[in-house]
Length: 432
Image (tube, rainbow, N blue to C red):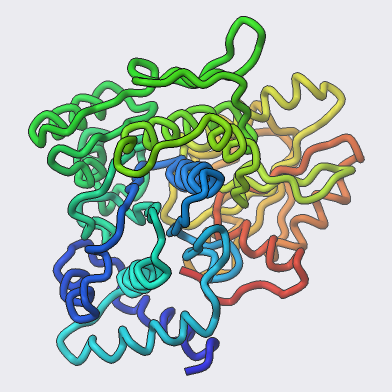
């Protein structure tokens, strides 16, 4: 199979939808020799921040001289972004070879989903690449997520708990915490980030039941400024000063703290880190679509926030930005999926923005500009519409001065369309 045929086959698996459960995944991996059994894994879940935390952990491990596999989702432009070794994407030829092997063992009794097949491919690739550590980001939830076939990770992290994917995970933070807490394994340390009281009680109960040491942000570890204004990590065993974070936004300090605590929790299992590797990894880490600047004069920034909690973090950043740049207005280019909380997302952002340009990603699940406009009836600022993302960016640029900030947010799919077009490869017609 050539690469385009492989990608077409993979996206064809989306007809199976999202199936939460591990039976298919375990059978599929068993038929290709259980590659995951040989892997040393750091497993990271959460509502927001899990991708950034995974990227930071991988960057620090790489700077420490480890061979590191990184599995994340979704991708922005290119499918191969999901599966990396030492920062390098899996090759097109290897994608084809691994899918051919996996298809050969599915037979008629297995119908893996897109995410199950992709996860199996990643685990095979990491095992064959002989990585020292595989950093796995949970796709959805945790308890029944395909990545949860890992029975004995070195350590786990749950970055945040918020309201998202309620149709699969439940309608309260406690219910969502229960699903995400499914990655907590007996005796394996678990790091938790900034979560509410209800969620923390649930996670603490699961950890106690499974005799898993629990490390909590703000109580057992933190990343904060010292008296001289420098960032300092204060962990369970270590204090590391003069730290800087390559990802913008104060919320990334929480993610960096979780990544550091995760590595600290795995210490003694071949994950010992030098302070220089920590500093270099955090300073040089790159993670696309998270407060990412892609142009200047005016500044054009992409952020993958797509639920109310992430919108609040984005609003805090915009508040800080406008306080530093009082002459700048913020023009929001906004598109979301239809099944997301549109009102909950936009409400914390409205005080920060001067204008809004409504748009939609090239995906059937995208909310229309009319559906988004319906939640703005109480806002009296200018609202423009441009269905195509690049047209929306052009409208925003036409209304901006060189000092303004254009912020594109609401959907990673929207960001992917913008990045694909900016790179000159056109809008991606399919994406998982």
